[in-house]
Length: 198
Image (cartoon, rainbow, N blue to C red):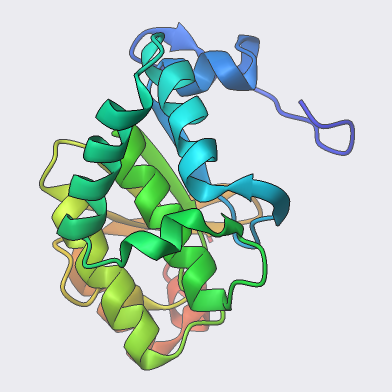
């Protein structure tokens, strides 16, 4: 855990206590986290980073040519140019490119559970549409996806199963996709006023 944060309670995934696992153990268990503002990693190509992450995720080294084939298939599925993977990880990337990099990582690593923290932050309408389209392709792969967002627009084109509203670290309102659209039109004040126990 980070020194600035205190976590109470239990977080279980597939019967395992996640709070007792180290980050690499969580990744191997099939968890993925996309940060709101991912860091640059100068000098490390996205391709090399993904090959090492793939080996760590699945517990086996993959020959370079075999991995390039896997990566190429995922990039083609997501409509990405191969040259994108030869750039430094997030180095000089625009906001939209950083988000596409995260989606490519998600596609290659095939997690069982993905937590996407404000993936729509700072994206224009076109970039948001591309990211939504990529997510809908990945969602078909039996991956549970949790999207943390303040706006329903990332959900366009996605079939979301549940929507939860949080306040002060607690879920205060739950519903289906209609709740997200109501939040978009009526704001959060309405949700907090109608929250459980408020």
